[in-house]
Amino acid sequence: MTRASLDKQPHEVASMFDDVAERYDLTNDVLSLGQDRRWRKEVAKAVDARPAQKILDLAAGTGTSSLPFARTGAYVVPCDFSQGMLQVGKQRQPWLPYTAGDATRLPFKDDTFDAVSISFGLRNVQDTDAALREMHRVTRPGGRIVICEFSHPTWAPLRTVYTEYLMRALPPVARTVSSSPDAYVYLAESIRAWPDQPALAGRLGKAGWSRVAWRNLSGGIVALHRGFKAS
Image (cartoon, rainbow, N blue to C red; front, side):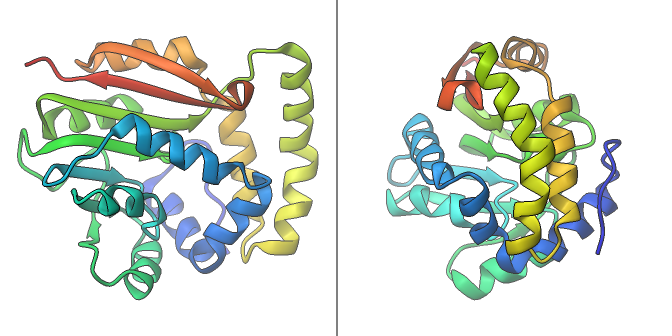
């Protein structure tokens, strides 16, 4: 089994997710106490996919996050750099156009998509700023980006409890449900090291996105950032 380090070497991260692919969705459901379903609904609302629109779902994994977009009649492309995740997804939803790709070097032309979404994946990219610029490049003028990512609880007591859960409770729980519990030790460490809400908003602005805003979910355990590409 592979555990990635916080310098996020792409081959390590991809291999780690290959290892957890089969039970990834189940494990996330257990570890988030079912909250991940609510978070994905909020992502779908923020993306606001419409029929015939083109949606890029980055770090799509097995494609679970892509299904709400597909149900609207939009053309959604699930993209991930873990071959294991894509293979599991293709078995479950063979009609989706799964595409292998690195967020820092996307295999798409400029101005292709009406919206780009990435849920719980930007944190695993080695070069966050390069990925934000690439997402900007492949989005059409007037298009939007939606990022759903673990963040920093805004209420100090919740922040303390959450940090204790991440470092003490999460790895033992992961051992009971995941095929690769070490991956969830990395998960806990990477969440703690991730920038807070204003810092991520600032990085979106530097990458070219305008009208950047965010909304906290579950008290800031997760944050939903949104921005637009100038027309």
